[in-house]
Image 1 (cartoon, rainbow, N blue to C red):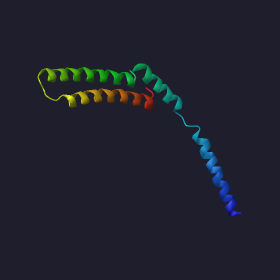
Image 2 (tube, rainbow, N blue to C red):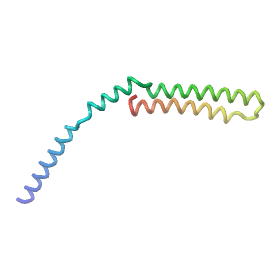
Image 3 (tube, helix red, strand yellow):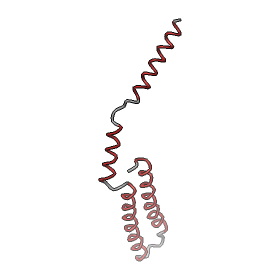
Image 4 (cartoon, one colour):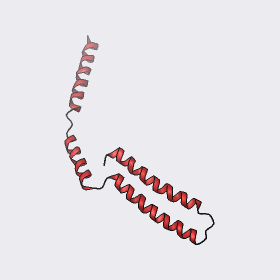
Length: 101
C-alpha cells in the first residue's frame, strides 16, 4: 500500500510539474523583441555580405598591387582572399539560420 501511495504522489507531482511548465511567462515578450530586432537592424546575412564585399575589394586591391610589383607567388594570397569572403557569406547564412535575424 505504501508503494502505491508513493507512486501515486510521484505521478501527481510529475503531472503538476508538467502543467506548470506550460505557463512560462515571457514567450510573447521574446517574440516581440525578435520582431523589433529584425525590423530595426540589418539582417545577419546582409551584414555578412557587406563585410564579404569589403574583404573582397580590399583583398583584390592588395593582390593587384603585389602582382604589379612583381611578387613571384601570389597564389596563397588569392586563396586567403577568396576563402575569407566565402567564410563571411557562410557565416551570415549560419547566423540567419540559427538566430533568425
